[in-house]
Figure 1 (tube, helix red, strand yellow):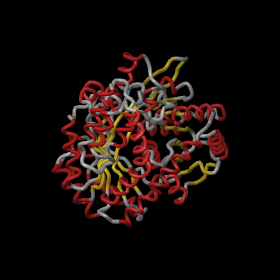
Figure 2 (cartoon, one colour; figure 1 turned 120 degrees about the vertical axis):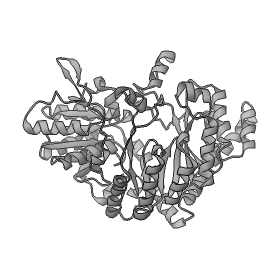
Figure 3 (cartoon, rainbow, N blue to C red; figure 1 turned 180 degrees about the vertical axis):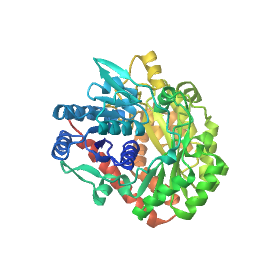
Figure 4 (tube, rainbow, N blue to C red; figure 1 turned 90 degrees about the vertical axis):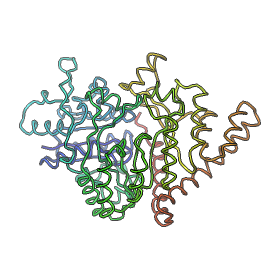
Length: 503
């Protein structure tokens, strides 16, 4: 049985598709994974040529998010026209939330967690049987959408094979062709030249923030259960990848909340991590889970960066709109702990929120000016994804929103207050207060725009470099090793944005 699995991310770092690919291989099926980082008419043509020129697969699967959905539809329609007898299966969070939409161009939709669903499809095709009975599948029957019952979440994450850094049987769209993924091409299409390894130790999130897909998934599965790998299994994956790529310099842990693990779990992890890995690492957390005890032992093992969300400095917005329950003081306490242990902070703020007033945004600025410097901000434009709680809230109050399939959630509006949020880590509290108080004066705005330009072009990159240096324990050599690939990654992502046109 032969499967072709497609990843539409601009990089190779697609957890979902890579996990399914390795799962199929571990069960004796032949699986090919194809990375399509550029979304163009030529990439669709190259994909169709590849499928037609090689041994034809028994099915094609594609996992994607909402901003990739227009291209998924574009290639899905092309595949169905060229190969009407090959089942095309849509998956990922967008298909999970919007199965009816995806069934306009896909034969089937795999809803939710899909390792065992796709394995059953492969087994059933190999047996020559129909697979419309398989759990998690949605499909059309006589024009009506049928949805099969969900299978439970996978509890034993240690039973899953590792997705790998550079997967076996991997291909990539490169120079208008689908070609085998060599190590050099892998480095070209992987962020930071493949020198940072992305990994997860858990699935799920203990919270259901209104803007996040977890608010939909917790209702779909009727649980907020956080499923965890053992520390031993987690370290084993790192060791295997480090043996394959000894030039790795960073572990990027992508759990929604890595600090949600119990203290005992962290103690086991730290013991083995210091023994076998010893590289700096990045984690994501919420303010509620960041404690002195956990940060202390993780810093000793190499914790370099913490990504954490403020989202809004308005506690009204956080509580009533975002359904987040960490107070501003709790957030500030967490940032002080990061500063105390010399851990670089990367803090999320959501902008362009129609539920916010100017005073709410000013509250965010007032919180940020109290955060110990230096730190970096990651700014998002609020996006309303169908199926999330905030989508329904927005629809009820405002009647609709911009299509998330085409909205760039990093593309926030350059209003005065948004720009003030951005440079609040880079200027003094007195300057922040002055510009807020005099924001309606022409002279103050002219001065502010000059300072904003200087900060965003000069000070912000220098601040980031300093934080990188601090995170690598003041090692200039290691800092340059990751800073140069970081710069290349940013340039490449900008060029890919310009190169994505399939209309």
